[in-house]
Figure 1 (cartoon, rainbow, N blue to C red):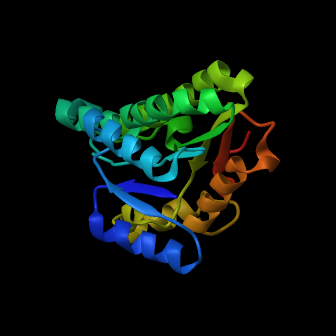
Figure 2 (cartoon, rainbow, N blue to C red; figure 1 turned 90 degrees about the horizontal axis):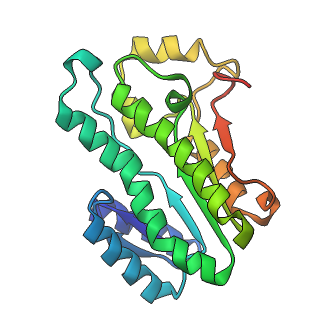
Figure 3 (cartoon, one colour; figure 1 turned 60 degrees about the vertical axis):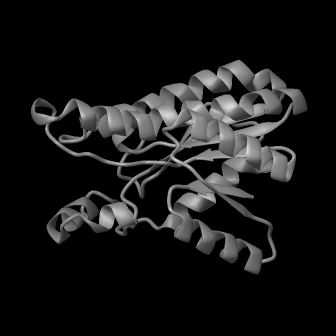
Length: 216
């Protein structure tokens, strides 16, 4: 398993967790919004593991502000990290996957890419763009036994949501029919399913993992 992020310490912790459980993992420090870093990291990962079968794009940041007050830099930063990075990473794996005639690509979008969200025009646009990217790639590579799907989390307990106020959390919870905040394990299980052989006839799909906040 190749894991990539900007934080070396967290990467080392994840590698340790994987290897302790009996798996193999290697860390690659990179900013996924930097094309040259992405190219170098993927070249190193393929050199280390000989191939990449599964790609999970899960980088995401927020720079929240009403659109009338949003700085261009906040728009660009969010689109670069949340959307352009997925294109850059897919671009690196698509050739090898086509040659081996097998692959799984999974993009992490958001419920707000499906519904929109006030104060998050940049974030919602980036996540909606990921849905379009997912469907386009799925159509392009389906004939080579490569699937491309997306997972759309709802309100999940993460470092990002932990910064939100308690009042916001309680109001959000009222909109969840299952009556609880989602966990990272809920998302990981959905990603694992889409990467598995059991999901081999699913592509171009957005799997909503939101406790019922958005249905249909």
